[in-house]
Amino acid sequence: MKGLVYGGPGIREWTDVPDPKILQPTDVIVKMEATTICGSDLHVLKGDVPETPVGTVLGHEGVGVVTEVGDAVTAIRVGDRLLLSCMTTCGHCVNCRKGLLSHCLGEEGVPGDAWVFGHYLNGTQAEYVRVPYAETSTYKIPEGVEDRSAILLSDILPTGFEIGVQNGQVKPGDTVAVIGAGPVGLAAVATAGLQGAAKIISVDLDDNRLARAEEFGATAGVNSGAAEWREQLLALTDGEGVDVAMEAVGIPPTLQMATEIVRPGGHVANVGVHGKPVEIAMEKLWTKNITITMGLVNTTSLEMLLNLVAAGKLAVDRFVTHEFAFDEFEKAYDVFANAAKTNALKVLIH
Ligand code: NAD
Ligand code: ZN
Image (cartoon, rainbow, N blue to C red; front, side):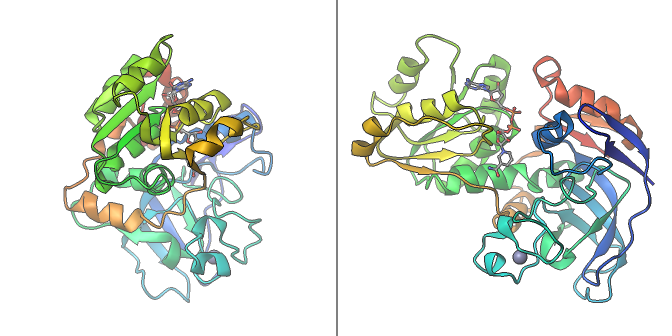
């Protein structure tokens, strides 16, 4: 079969790789129908994720059809159409039982996190993939849910909802700001309404992204490149600040921005993945009764979000801006990696 292989920093190729085989009785083999590219894949490609072995097939998002099942698999049959979670989870270790799926201790020698596809093991950007712990790491896709919607549930929608909206404890009537209007920030914008946010302010440097945010439910946009961005934002909250400030970029200045625009008693929900320490003005924040949260997505909301999509209550297909065939994978990477020029949000490879 063919897969998109990490060949060391800066090197990727859509090339021949061995067909995956069942290795554990809890495995299934899935023929990929659709997959996509995530910012994390770009990090691996840059060489920022040294634990990923050279030769690994990338990708951790996908939809496919089961072609083979292991001996212990009873709830999944050949021919089932499955959504693959970005988290591969045994379902019975101490962390899984606490709902901390992202920290599954599964027996496969996975050191402390459940992001396995395209990280420690061959991923979903391939014609076939071996899915470990299949019964607890996949979801049957309800009739009528298309690939272009389902694919968003592997990672970005649960991430925006769980780490942004749920951790931020958004309540009915709240005013929320989401800093960063990439796929993840927009997923938070798109799901903040599920917990009743009244005003959703999107903050980004890119006016195109701010315009996009309005299509996903943002009630206002603020360009943080403007000198008076803070005044603009506070004016939208009667000067009080937001109830919940979410950070969906992953750099020190944007987390600091979140702490500057939150009102007393509010929540700062960090979603971005940081590569270096961030200085937080604790001396100003402590009297404001601020809660700061962070985390790795657990995908515990995945099934609920899938049900909403299936019921037509969460329209997400507009995340897909570009479509490619599998043999155009390299082109898909070029388009996704140049999002500022191409206006790509999510690319669907199918
Ligand atoms: P992205 O790079 O596509 O989008 C980032 C956005 O932030 C862009 O629109 C960019 O214009 C904007 N931005 C950059 N600097 C800014 C600034 N100073 N002010 C305002 N906006 C600014 O990223 P993404 O794919 O949407 O992911 C966002 C973050 O979420 C990343 O750090 C990613 O690694 C992280 N992430 C976290 C989890 C988790 O489990 N916590 C899971 C997936 C992704
Ligand atoms: Zn587990």
